[in-house]
Length: 167
Image (tube, rainbow, N blue to C red; front, side, top):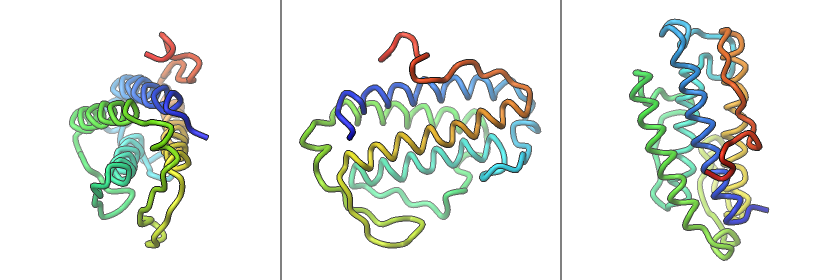
């Protein structure tokens, strides 16, 4: 299960990995960055947008202030630089939120409405936080495949490769 220290580490890892992937993607011409490469969200830009949408949905659930979107593929920011800046702000908010978690809060029950199933759900907050960070990693894996297809070296983004560890 998720602990406060694990959540803090994952929040910092999330920001570090996102920054590395954005730097790598910024090497591409805009047409290549937006090129539909057949992934679930089409392009690198589409996948980045999805990650921001999902992060904001989950942070809305965690904070009790719902974040409303039209779809999980909604393009929040058509401009790549604006998207990067908005995501950086969200990553900072995630770190601040994770820093405030306690063992007691992680054991509390989270109630929310599933965006996809349109049903009320509930689960331990710690499980939802684990899912939150796992979801980010899942889609960053898709971005690394898309960057590889485009011939871009994104470097190491493994958690253990984050230096300094826990930064």
